[in-house]
Amino acid sequence: MKKSLLLSFGILLFAILMITSCSVSYTTVATPKPTKQMLVTSGDLANKNYEVLGFVESTASEMGFGMPTEIKISEMKTKALNNGIVTKAESLGADAIINVSMATSSQATYFVLLTTNVFVKGTAIKFK
Image (tube, rainbow, N blue to C red; front, side, top):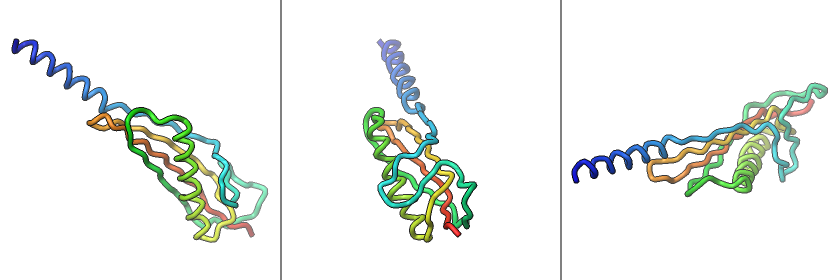
């Protein structure tokens, strides 16, 4: 009886450790279409003269059960883009954001809740 209880506890502990160490991460090069009026690109604008105003970044996070759908991740990317780096770039007086990149990370916690983070970063510029 004690052996089977100990074995059951060991299997449960192993399962919990396996679940809590799961992680998924990927980077998106293409950017979703912003809803505000600002040029946003994943590349540089080599044919334009501009002044670099600064680095802008933003994060959107969600916590829930199970893996998020692509629709949910797309909504999070749009939120991090428009309510994050575009707003920050506007406050700097920027005309555009170049070299934009996005990364998504999902991490399971001890209680099988999944935390999903979207990181967006870019360079705010002003045309000369």
